[in-house]
Amino acid sequence: MRTYIGRQEAISAADFAELALGTPVELWLGVEGETDEERAAREDAARGILADDPDLPDDLIRIAAQVIEENPDLFDVIPLSRPARRRAARKGVAA
Image (cartoon, rainbow, N blue to C red; front, side):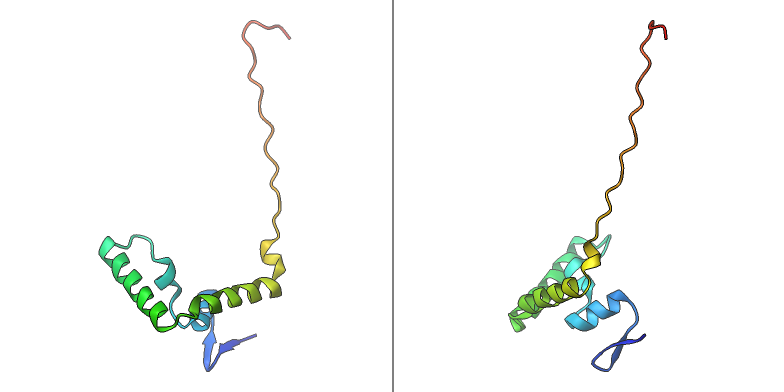
């Protein structure tokens, strides 16, 4: 099944998020190993986008709520069992 946002095909989850948001996800989340200068430039660009589109945060919340509503299994949590603790044998105690 193919997913399109407008005329663009979303091939991966990152593509879908970028097309839905209209900006690359990395703009908001950053990238591993970015320098302080790169981070400052990224944050400056993000501030500019928010200044131009003050409704963007509300739109993002609506998108996130829709995704959660349509995919409730995203938050299915399976508890993991803890391994049993080993008891240390006491010195000098006969079994």
